[in-house]
Image 1 (cartoon, rainbow, N blue to C red):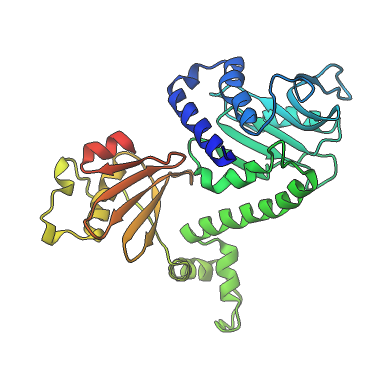
Image 2 (cartoon, helix red, strand yellow):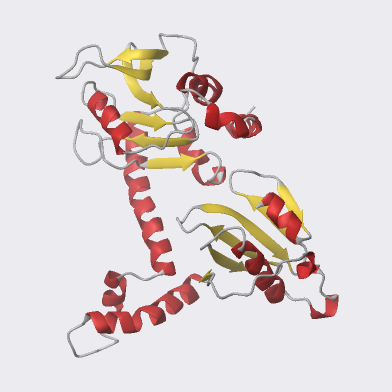
Length: 334
């Protein structure tokens, strides 16, 4: 079985116990989520010569400090792992604990996880000092596995090569910054990018670029960038009329259009996901709405087929498609 199939099987098993996770202890999280994750990567989680629990990491101020797991090669740690219970938020405090462990050995990879979110750290900025930000981070429920699975695969036992991982991590970290910045700028162009275009010789403002000029050209910049990237990003306003019955998708065929269905879908979503935004992707066969929360987290996409105006919902992290026929369907699946 390929790694991709194994990982897909792992995700489907985890999805079945999703509703129980809020009550998980740290030990339950390790047993049900974290150990199976590393088992999929090819490690024998019951062989302490390979996957050592409670690995001792002495620090300057304390002796006998332990990290939850260490993956060993020839007796030396190559990856250290700090585990938290499934319901715990991963914050700077937990990173600080891992930060202390990181500096005590020669391993280059540290992982902080609660079994749902995985954060991978290295020392890309300064040797033997763990970076403040992870070079790889994903949520197994919220993020599309097709985006991160190739990055996870490089940590498989048979493929792990620290030089290759670090080399890719440098580019991955840069790419993450670019992607995040572009997404933010497509939604709301920053002062820096507006100023950049105003300073282009083709524009020739002839004046010092002021805050007022930047604000004046922000919307034009947003629309121009969205046109170039071929997307249409919209945020739902509070004054949109909410459609509150199942008649939203009962139009006569001759009056239906992708645009009308999309607008009605947005009205319904407004009552489910406050302050959401979406990126519209249009093709000859369909219109797809990539839906994000106000925190910029993608929760899934809706595809409206142009052939029969059918509506398909696909949740991030879940390959199953749902056909949406009514408002009740939307509330049940989104």
